[in-house]
Length: 263
Image (tube, rainbow, N blue to C red):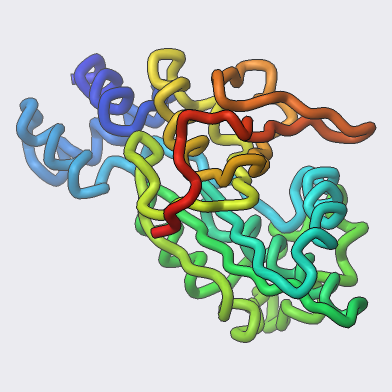
């Protein structure tokens, strides 16, 4: 059954599954179904039961701070207008909330506030449920994001050893379940954050995943990936850009994808 589960993980999720995680999933299937054939395997993947065993949900506020500095440097272009941002593979939502915190902090210092909307998705329904609740343990505060702590503090309410996101921060964020193997349900994004997830995508499906994300960008829109992932990313409609501190991709204005219709 192990080989069948590894193949299914790639076909359904586009990932190279960790053998230890596959073993846990195999035990779960035998405990709950008593046996495993292709129909059972298809069932646990189609219902989302398998996802929690095979995906990594590591996240915390302002992870890889240089990416947020890059976003901040672009915000002046959207003063008195709206910026649309996607947090892809958002896990429990720290990235999406970090983006909102940054824009809120930026708006407090200018006369023409930036209007914003953030979409955030993950394939795992359980982590999306957690993101909607916005309740976190202390591990979501790390040293490498400490320079943004003044942005975090106004929106985190501490209760014992837990932190709760202030409800006001949720107003411009929409969390939903989505599989990167499929086309995005919305498009027209100015920024897409897709960080520290591409490393788990199999070589067979990397172009497909990048194509789905690229199609969601406006022409000239920005794709930000994890520091360790950019070397493995290549797409005909993305051009690599570089600042002193961060590498990112920009969608070519001659792209074959249409960015005129926002769903």
